[in-house]
Length: 309
Ligand code: GLY
Image 1 (cartoon, rainbow, N blue to C red):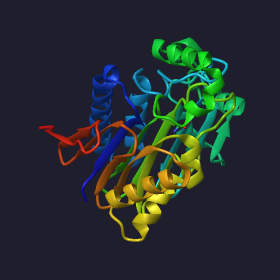
Image 2 (image 1 turned 90 degrees about the vertical axis):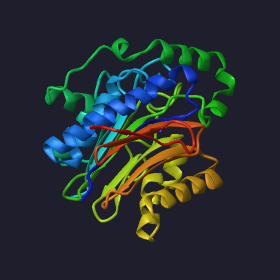
Image 3 (image 1 turned 120 degrees about the vertical axis):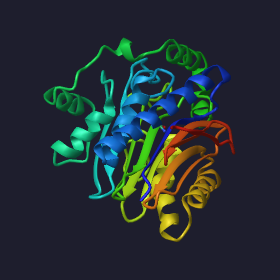
């Protein structure tokens, strides 16, 4: 069994100024997530560790660096799923939390529920001793500038949502040495979203899915489009029908574009350790560690390889 850890930093038209930071960030998360995978041996531990790192890097739209809603506030969504048991935990519209993926994991492991939202999720975080941080600590200059631009062009805002011009989401998938798979996804959503808007990320089967009988997926892109086609579960459906992770990812992304004109990206593993990182946007920063090799890319068709030894 070959263990694999694969991460993404969001599918969108990443400007050159953020390109190096995005690649460095996904490489760091993939390496440290893989170390966790080797140390603890658990796919769930590895995806949580990798997503926490991405949430802490302000270049990405999750945790620190999250985009702002119409009120200029931060509302965060996250999911984690364990392919062995189909246990899942998710949070939506949480505020003042640096690492929503860890809160999602607490929902999965310490409640009888699958998703907590808004003030209820924040109350649960407090009970769990998960630290709350001031909103300003999560907000970057870039996120504030992006929000101001949206406010300025408010009338045409609905046209701006389904474009590639805004930050999007982080995620991780893993298969461990026992063949267990897991996924985790975390996001600030889309800039200038309505207060209370929930995207694809925390919705099981849309922002992520993991099942030891098939594999694991984390999705990124235009949330409303991903929700309509249930993108993560759609990829796994195609794998159940015999497609490879690469074929399944491309088929599902094409379907989303054809049916709802939506663009995005997915990272995929199966239980054999085959993997794919595919996107229909201009760019998606991704990195993968397998067998002491690190693979990464940003532009379509790109795959660089480095040895970790
Ligand atoms: N894909 C993240 C969102 O639309 O909220």
